[in-house]
Image 1 (cartoon, rainbow, N blue to C red):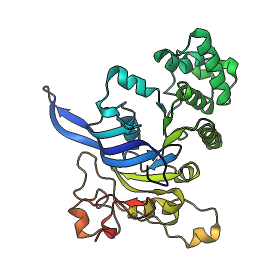
Image 2: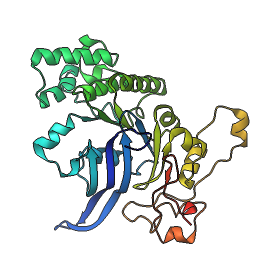
Image 3: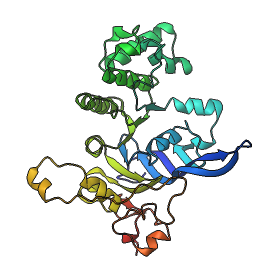
Amino acid sequence: MSNNGREKLVQIRGLKMWFPITRGILQRHVADVKAVDGLNFDVYKGETLGLVGESGCGKSTTGRSILQLYRPTAGQVLFEDKNLVNMKGEDLRHMRRRMQMIFQDPYASLNPRMTVGSIVAEPLEVHSIGNRSERLNRVRELLAVVGLNPYFINRYPHEFSGGQRQRIGVARALAVNPSFIVCDEPISALDVSIQAQVINLLEDLQAQFGLTYLFIAHDLSVVRHISDRIAVMYLGKIMELADRDELYRNPMHPYSQALLSAVPIPDPVIEEKRQRIILEGDVPSPVNPPKGCHFCTRCPKVMDICKEQEPEFRDYGNGHQVACWLYQK
């Protein structure tokens, strides 16, 4: 339970997703890309947990590892207290009805050779839900729910705009009545004018169906709008996790402070007084991350211990968790 008595829907413990690098004719294993490197966090029932960070930090890989689209290298993913990592075949397929994903690119995630009706009905067929006429009614109902004309079922994806295609992707995710949806940057490929519509749709659906979201994004203002709590990720690790308002009011980790300093504030007086934190250097390679804290090579407040030992991910009250030596001296 914990966190104001709310129920934990997903529990991530020691999650690692390393991709092997091989060389030569014999495909000898020489190194690993440590995309996700030991994550520990929970997602509570009915909440939206925002996951933010720079491109390439492991956000999407985290989402796919939770849903077992990538089979994790190590760790546990407990969904309703059942460990998905140990599941295979029919057991895993049965659990997949409870978890779905909305993909980043609405142009690439819909099969151009299938009609909209077939795309949305596919999860129903995979899980043997209903007969043909029941599926057809369900597809029409889902299209209406996401704000599309139910009679578009015989059209193809190329006949729709980006925002409409993403709505089709949302309808497909909702088809099997999931309780948990991973939203993998669902608006980053869309026009700014359409982004708000899709965000509002996701919020309405959450209220209507009691959904739980892991919302992956790199736009901090969008994440602030939709999330209840926010986790800040850097190079395969979570640096800070806190309630949305708490994080924006009091970011503790130097990386969170730098990220939030780049978010514009629509008040010229405050904006003029604010100081931007510019990080030096580039993000290290996930093949060979730095010793100690992963952020130590770019941190403006780095200390000697940061380069030697990895800080613990600790709770500093009210669910505000940080992995930083500044608070663990």
